[in-house]
Image (cartoon, rainbow over all chains, first blue to last red):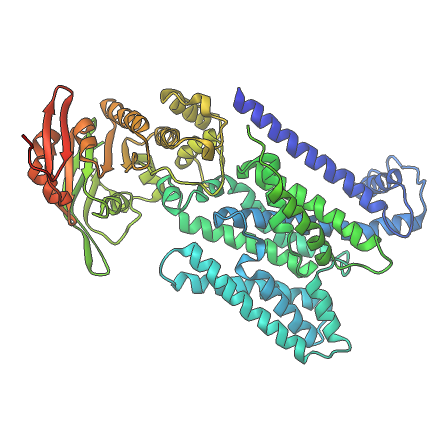
Length: 349
Length: 259
């Protein structure tokens, strides 16, 4: 009976998180220079869906909003709001996964050097004067290659594999940040250097309609296995010996989890630049909300992460006339929040 | 289930840790693996569990070569009960016990009603149902140990490897955990329990396997096998055996008899 009560509470936390996310999603679409009410946003979205499935010709809907409002919501804001949710969701899922894999609540998505590699790739693309699409590709490939390199090095090291992975991640990460520093040094200070610096701060301002499917595909490929394997992730977090004795193929499981978490991290960084804190803070907060069991923790982190990054991006694009890079804001919000979490007294049951 | 180990050897960087260990353990018996700290008891368990691949010799479970089994197939037959240790994440007791059922599941699925019933039954059997919602790290060492035993029962394996289960427990909890081990052996489980305390072997084990410098120093029924001479060889200190009205007592003592 107690278990049912606990499961009920977990379901409630997930439903409330999903509800909050949906509300924030609609409200975010109203924000911007051209004012649109929440009701109009909801009706525009419904109308688009209605027309999309072909019911409009059978049962036409009265259009009570201006074409300008529709264009602002659908063409300008919707892609960006979606990408903010996707990036927040992915970084949080990757963070929760890495924390479980490394048995360490302080692990974050860039623990294996993914963001260092992505930054180097992006800086290189900017230096070559490539298009923004190619900058994204370079960042994505940079992140994946870095983690692959870290993985290969750690496999050759004797001793505990998780420790070797973390150490190799730190080494390769710092090597790539040295590389990025050098690229900044040789970059043209009038246009390339600001572009690199801006990319490093992280921003969703470059989002286009095509960004949504381009990012969604690798994210889905990574997130689906992570969700399916989340019970095994619990077992893996007990440590290699115990997990093996409980029947888990530790090496294969860890490889798959790291691969998937890296894929979603790389896809996120590639479209948003380096955004810190989300992958560390959100799983922590979610753990307080729903407990350490990944069956609840992983979906909860994904929902809360999406909502969090959505709010931060709203602030980033609306607070001042010029955009504030989102990476700066996540740190400004994340650091004090984390201190609050640390100082907050644990509720004793 | 019968566990049979023949000529098991393992060397770490050319230093022999285990040297031609041979023994069998039958269903319904509690076999104590006795020896001082660092004699290779844990290594022996790691070889049996298939975690340590670089050991030579034969390990058979009811005649099946254990070394060809996957982790999942091993988990169906052998459950490992570690020493209580701090966990990275404080799972509730129920979830911890539920993890014992993992080998029943396909890799992409989570435990269902059948697995939850197994966990529930295991906890009920050990009388720890009241702990089910407690976080693992808020339990006492003895309770944590019982949770691990419950997890092993939920695993439904017939061989239980208990790795120094009483090392960090007080007297009361130690007796409780060992009595549980004793009664599980009585139910037909094959229980291997490693310990560095000869008194525990004497009180609870049917047979004892004594290890000394990586070799089998003695193997046989506990009372006949555990002699003063053997214990002095194992631990390098004078030991007296006293027969009292409460049973045989091991008394480590360098002094000669006074008066």
